[in-house]
Image (cartoon, rainbow, N blue to C red):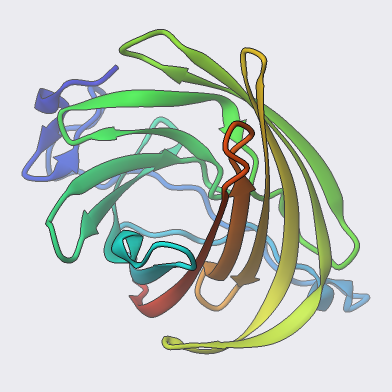
Length: 231
């Protein structure tokens, strides 16, 4: 994993990149077609360093878990984007790596990566279109303990919807993910309903739920975009 020295002034500097240089980032596929079919497709977003998002999370069962986080893309390296998450109230900071399709690669503190997902957790499979389905299977590894968890998901784009959140009103693709997580013999099931907005380059609203297999307690959260700034 990468240690604290790999980040300078809050920006990750890969060994092949000197401070101050501009990294090469992937470009999204042009949404053009002579048949006009591309008007119904959402291609991978053109994520940029400096893109900023503020999200609110509301826990339906425990208001103490409610929070607001500021998320910013601060670097690009090795084909992955580095996002810094800061809790608006506590200042607690997490770093997350994503691939260019917003699929989760790893999470950790500013000093080190703590958890990896191999292959990346497949929240998206671009281009999106109504009726598209995909499967994903990823092994989550805790780098400190060595413990592993298997995430499996089935996703379907169920439709296009206009969604209003505090950040505005967006044309979105509604994605329903059924998720299973295995930790030894412990099996946890969950569902994630997300509304992806091409204009914001990411999800603007999510509704998640999971049930603890031991206590049967249902955990439900609503996450929505409060504001954003794109570069």
